[in-house]
Amino acid sequence: MERAEANSPIADKDTPSVPISATYGVLTNPDVEKPVRNEANTYAHGKIVLHIHDATFVLLPGKTFGLVAPDVWSYPKSLTNEDAQDILTDLKKKLPDHIRLREAGEKLITTALLAGQDKEIAVPIWRLSSNASLAIEHLSENGLYNASKALDYLDSLVLEPYALFSFNQKVGQRTLESGFIEGTIFSGNGYAQDVGGGVCASSTIVHQAVAQLGLPILERHHHSLPVKYAETGKDATVYYGVLDYRFRNGEHHLLFEKIRTPERLGLRFWLAIH
Image (cartoon, rainbow, N blue to C red; front, side, top):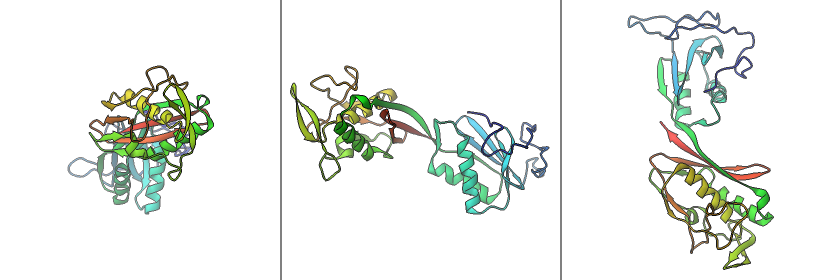
């Protein structure tokens, strides 16, 4: 987990780094109200402790929202829903690229901020677990279009634990009505034109992402000829109603995210972590 920097977008440049106790006790920053101990020797006034993956963030009540120590912020005790969302947005900026908050985690944080009470939360997250992509220079214009269109159908898909994934079922039949165009396909040892030609680049991307996770593959087929976009043995061809790509998910929810840059087309898998 990266540490808070002095030029953090949620930090006050003039705010000095201040020491805090092992239990996040009294801060010397004047913007943070001095915590009050109750009879149980705990701090009152709404200390919120967030455990996000392998890092811990602390929110202490104060006059305004701001960084007061590494991974420790002050927050105003009187908040609107909009204020809580703004604080959540700033907190998310401090997370590393391989961690994202799940919707349930975001709800837990904003609810705790609005309640302003002591709260310790193990925040549900998505963790980046595989990242596969192909260089688009090896794809034809129409093939790239169809492969990208297929990944559009998979983007934001959440696969349940132990669920069966079928490429043909999730993407559907490749037709003009579903947004695909004609492209080149392999026909035996030759070539032909068919609607959806080139979509195999996307099934190959799915296969490579699955292989990184080590999930059990239930159905996979190779092309009849070598393809430029994948090394020998690392491709996966599909043809609706005939050839499919199928795998079984593991014990976590699995989120699909399409990636498209000027040079590459790809897919990321995110695992749900509690």
